[in-house]
Image: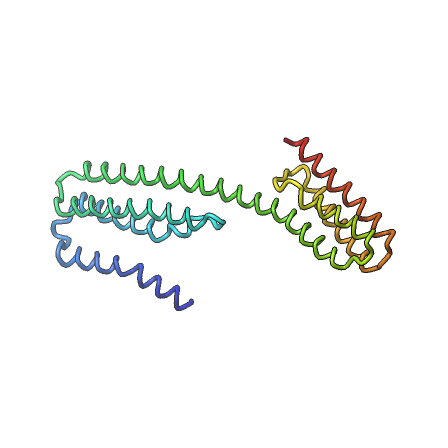
Length: 227
């Protein structure tokens, strides 16, 4: 286990150690009834949720922002639950009903807000993943063609490769599952064009560049039809 992980475990355990030492030394178990033990358990549950909250946030571009938001929810719940729990521990009512109901309602509200935010987090993470794939296609294709342009020495051939580059760079970034195969084919066409450029056959370079333009136009037309 890494030293950093050990330090985090020690840090998380500090509250539990201090709270339990104070609880058993000062409060003791003599006057601890059902209401006190229920409050004791709810405080520990709220603290456990505070600790595991970072592991509930799905990784993504907005993970830091959502992690902070969800952690704030868990922090607010823990602080509220701690204060309410301490109140019932000090009061120690004879009946456990009021202590249980109030703390159960707090946990319920927390659960609803937490799950709602986790669902929203998942939706945004899904959108970000799709967006990343869409951007990757245009970025990869554009960058590859930009590099290939440097290797084309013939002016006539370079004109057609530039045309292909312009078509790709001007293509809509937003994609659709129906054009995924076409986009893959375009990337394969670019690889084939690279081979022709290295081969130095001007006619094949021009022909390949023209076909690439047609493929890109087909992709954009298919994409337009999907909207």
